[in-house]
Image 1 (cartoon, rainbow, N blue to C red):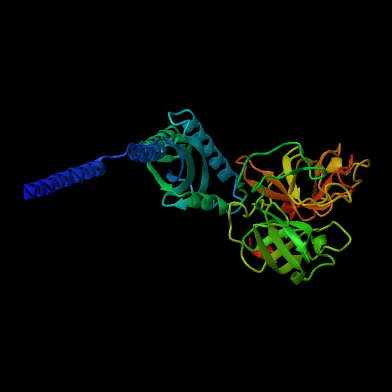
Image 2 (cartoon, rainbow, N blue to C red):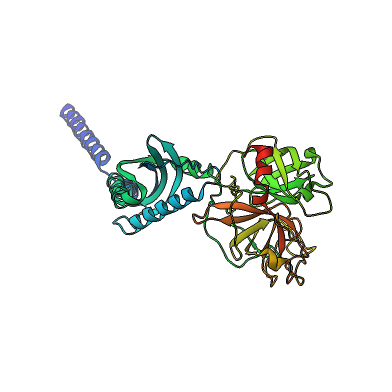
Length: 435
């Protein structure tokens, strides 16, 4: 009986052990609620992120850049956009830009259209090729359909203008390019600005700050580390300035050139290799107040630093034409120098008005021009000398028409600023630089 009891106990213990083991296994197989919730939330988060990225890619708008072109038969043009061009070339480019803009703004893609411009007009077989740059903004999912629509709109626009341009609609090409390549197309052209946003009514004397990249050809001539005069970039190696800036400071080793909007935090700095002052300039004086500055190293053009167009010698300016003067000159006579580039919007004043007895009394010659207001409301000032007086043509491409030269005070009534007339010195500039 004892043995049976013992065996029974062993049996009981064995059964009990099996039951405990089964209980433990059961506990291990059960899934805690908190863990289930965590996994569920994780899956939802990953799914949400995936859907969000997919929606972002397919629905959020992206800017696209295109390089386009077409053929014009029978007429040869040569406008490489790196220098001033003939009036006929300017007129054709303006007409093309206007017609393209109108075509897109009146089309089914008007909301996606941002801008377009003619980059070059170059000779090719039996005529010329027109090079375009176009910008649109739309979701990536529309990429293929948009390209088809853009090309169709350009094709129809050319068909509508075959008679006036001798355009060949079937010659259209359209290629997507990167933002960098799109910017380079513009940067290599003279006189193009990063922004067309202009605040009217400001002035260098007691004025407003220029926008970043608004005047990419503006340079600060730094003598022994301090801003002394302004200058304009006219090629990758040459700047144009005023002769009187170098009258007593003609050692090129003392000069540096800063480019940018903030005078002491430039985008780019270059050493000066050579300074060429006009042979007929004598100090003190304002006749032949023009000088060329050659850089020791070429400038690499960017959207913030590139050249202004030189005008053709025959370019004519009329009274009341709008022009802009820029510089880091004093905010008023004997006042402080600004850190941010200043801008003033002026009007061309006829030389006869400037030379009146109550004004500048015959001081202004044919190689000079006047700009500002007889009321004295805006003007350049001290240390603006050598800086640009810029004029936009019908395509909003800017040309260097004047160099800050002289003035009686700053912003005085009946005493407008006097500028060296650049068109009068085009042959001299070419003889020294080849430009």
